[in-house]
Amino acid sequence: MSKLYFRLLVLLSVSTSILSAIVPSIWPNEQALLLEAYLPETEMTDTMMWVSVVAIAVYAVLYIVETIALLLFVSWAKPLFIVLIVLAMPLYLLMDVTVATPLVQFFYDVGMFCSGMLLVLLYTDPVAEYFKKSV
Image (cartoon, rainbow, N blue to C red):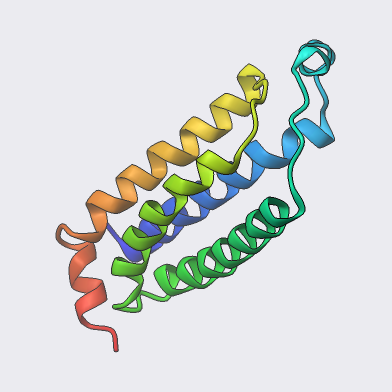
């Protein structure tokens, strides 16, 4: 795989993941909004809110740094990619119940498939060789 195709895969993963988060606000689905109206609201304490905000902010900064490092083939981007996958798991516990439309779920799934492909490619040749040549 060439460097260009790897970079395109990184950008596809990032863009589809971002699209899965912003499509509901740009293109709201009437049925999804009606279903969400029936979900019970849970009260979040101030402490839990701040923990959530800080955790998401730290994760977002690390994600941006990791993405740029992957695009530049920096050697420490490989372990950071795995660390971010592991760090994302507890963030799911902070999420509330949501209703996902097929389009949103499609973008999310494509982003996750691309992340899986990136994980495999990072540790196999020839992509692994690109990272060995970097500082």
